[in-house]
Length: 280
Image (cartoon, rainbow, N blue to C red; front, top):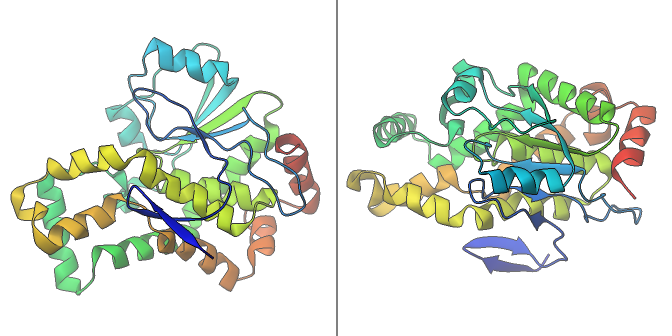
């Protein structure tokens, strides 16, 4: 597969259909409409939206989401995260809290750790002889294996199936890890090719490039210099081997189709219903 580099992110050379929604306070918000499936169908626009946290949205941002027919918001964050940065209430939009990870296992995936926490985290990695990238690959693989996470993603699919009209938006903190895995599972279930699934995941690196740069510049000098700077970046950026860790873990087990049926509850009949609802 040929590739190009966009904002420091390696992207496959293909017709990327991700449509970014220009929210002023949520830079990683997009519409998955337009992605082609293996059998020539297309994901409907204004149906499947993914994002980071919807904290302190402006009236203009709320109006923009409503113009994309937003009906349901599914929040993948923990109770503590929701308490700290509650989503903006948007009139006539259903809100469903659905934490993907338990608070005790959340760790660095909160994607907003203070410098001191990151410094302690690096010390722990050094003691284990593990790089930040290796940690992230392990973390993604653990999402694929974690029983609680699987049960929550199963509920996520149930919510998608019960949605009769309008758009569903799901999000975590930055819209990178938990929301990224959710998007990968949905696109895969709809029959979108793996290259396109990975392309959507990697677009987070483009949409959040400025935010990540600002975050890294705000860390202590002891972290922002030399090898630790690259290690810190590995925690907050996206890499194809992160999402591949999930997909390969699932395929190496019972296979993706069996996983979607047995673990996500997508029987052949329900998978066809999902496609009928979200494809055209």
